[in-house]
Image 1: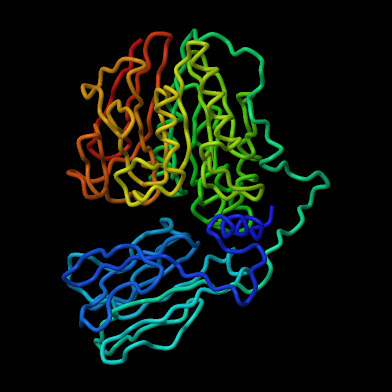
Image 2 (image 1 turned 180 degrees about the horizontal axis):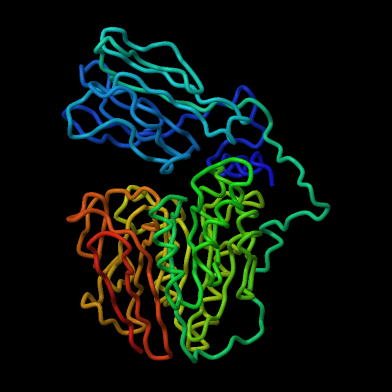
Length: 475
């Protein structure tokens, strides 16, 4: 598929008209960290303040595939952050250091540039509002010791984003063509044993290599990767990453897509799925990240909420065909007496920087109501794991020796090697949390799940860092 189709799906999901022209102007949401105030509420208007002589210290931008870079007092230009790097919503600038932002550069990721431009203007000490600039130009001042006080950002569409045709004669299936229920063949009963590794947010550096090698050296039967793979773009990047994985892991390596393989443009998920194909004979659509498989006493269901693939962006909202598909797959597994695990990329319950819930907020409640035993996710580059909880995040058991059917355990296993991040907090709902600001630093690794007919045991296998974590659910 062409990147144009991917970005088209993303912009439609954000409310940008499918017939975007040069007259289409959409404010970009963001929030500013301001002197004496801290982080202000997210807005689509003015980020920061005017008329109060307060310095803007950091900004976060949301909703669009943007990269941005801050020029900061005593530091100069800091590294680019954003969609091509850590993800939408990462902070540019500093906090807690009383340093002023002096200038900013903002640009669309290359695969989004065909849709138009990002424009922005800055309110600067003694100068007021500067002229609008666009597409990576410098807004603000450098070398003048003047503080930025506010910022406005907008997306301006340029051409009608009609998806380009594919090279194949057979069209890809659309969301409406996807069956609303899994195949009706009765699943096997939940017997035997299985062992599964879960990981996400890998990259192609030493940290990811250590995690993959640890998995490959283990005796797990297969691997569930929860998205965000190479963190690089360019021709052939998918095959490069697949080779990086295959050099370290021989077990079946099953994929669901992350945002970096879709709206962020770091390769195409279809190409990743082609070079690391389904080896478990799954039910559903492996190439679109919606499938399930029975592995001994476990039914594992992979889904892809709010991942803007060329064929469409499934949300798994209440009343949707994909929610019905998911619920039926869960109910079949439960009826067969299996443990049910659901995996996806984007979490809602998380202690990382993506805590604003970047997908449907009702999905977690549905998974709890349906009786899912474990939910595994990535996206935030840290490790966190909840106690067994019920609706409204109520803890029903906090001793790590849980009873099946009382609640659901949620785990974020985005500590697979790509640039670990800090956590925001670790409140009582969470049994274990690890980020760069944790005692002893971040822990990288993967989650091992071993299941028999009577127990499901999970353990964090650390490749670096001090955190340990394990728990068991018993029938």
